[in-house]
Length: 388
Ligand code: FAD
Ligand code: DHB
Image 1 (cartoon, helix red, strand yellow):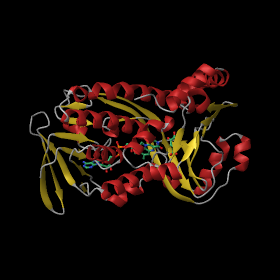
Image 2 (cartoon, helix red, strand yellow):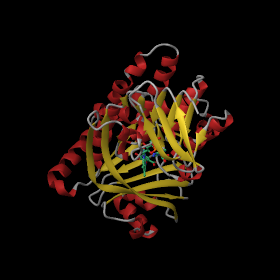
Image 3 (tube, rainbow, N blue to C red):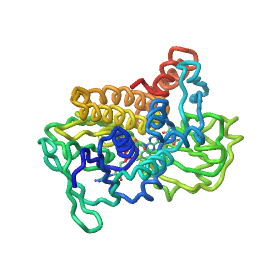
Image 4 (tube, rainbow, N blue to C red):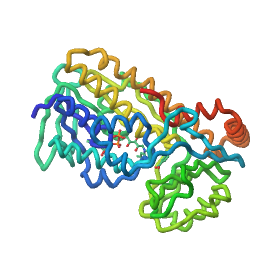
């Protein structure tokens, strides 16, 4: 088989890249290790920056999002007895969209189906060959048969545990990592959200986040020790702990109910440089991971795909500079969003090993935020997303 671009990974990065390329006449194929149902069953991000919404619209997949998503003009941050309303719209002129990653992925699959774009699911043993030469190719197993795809370029969109990043020689790669000493326990429940906007709550028992998908679907998270397991957390224990970590006026109105999904995710900050090697280009979680506190993971994947799609399309039109600059361009935005996610995580969570000093610093930071329009603007500008 021959395709112009071979995309490894059928998560949001890979699917969006395939769609943008195909709409510009570039022939791309997607290889995904899991089944489509499995990919669509993963509950992940829920906050989309305006930049991502605009790309989805441009790719022709914004219609359901605009109909069913919820525009949020602000968020609530509460910690150490101080509650701050961050008014994104007033401070930056921008908003965010509440629309689940699962829905984005489903819309992308449907759009790819409509144009008969090839996606191989349950592709096993995907391997990259000769990415540093002029004739790269990818091999994989599918339906017990061995396949080979010859291509011009390979896009590594296969997430943190994929093969793409690992295919770059260690001598070329530089990895930066900070692992946090806790995870997030998340539940999805068919209950109304606790407030009209997301609530980020710092508490001495640990961080809590109240998010949502729609008027009767809530997504909540609790900071938990890394040693905790899902089995240890009954629904009742979850709700009791969440109530404890919210300001009393919100705890009193919290509606509880059975969870329909429950999972624990570890938190890390990770960036691998460079994001390209020869004819291999990394995008999304394959190259970087942010802690979820700033809602940046999916949004960063989207900005990578924005830069990479434009660079590949320009290259096929005879202009190679954007592709040559891709890694540097993408990384400049990645580092800034990582800084924001890291600082939100530091401000809101309990770090038991760091003692009372950090706790008082967090308190000072939230009080400063509450009283400084400049600090609120800086937070809002990062939360709604830095420009591409
Ligand atoms: P992924 O979504 O990881 O997609 C990569 C795809 O590649 C997967 O479908 C995988 O099956 C496939 N793949 C892997 N290896 C191979 C291989 N060898 N061959 C072929 N295919 C392969 N972000 C937020 O902003 N908010 C959140 O609440 C949030 N929660 C999260 C919870 C969890 C448990 C995780 C893991 C991430 C979460 N994120 C969150 C981050 C966000 O979901 C990711 O940043 C986003 O999914 C990145 O998209 P991606 O397409 O780059 O990677
Ligand atoms: C969600 C997740 C986040 O990490 C975040 O910061 C906001 C919302 C969510 O899943 O809805």
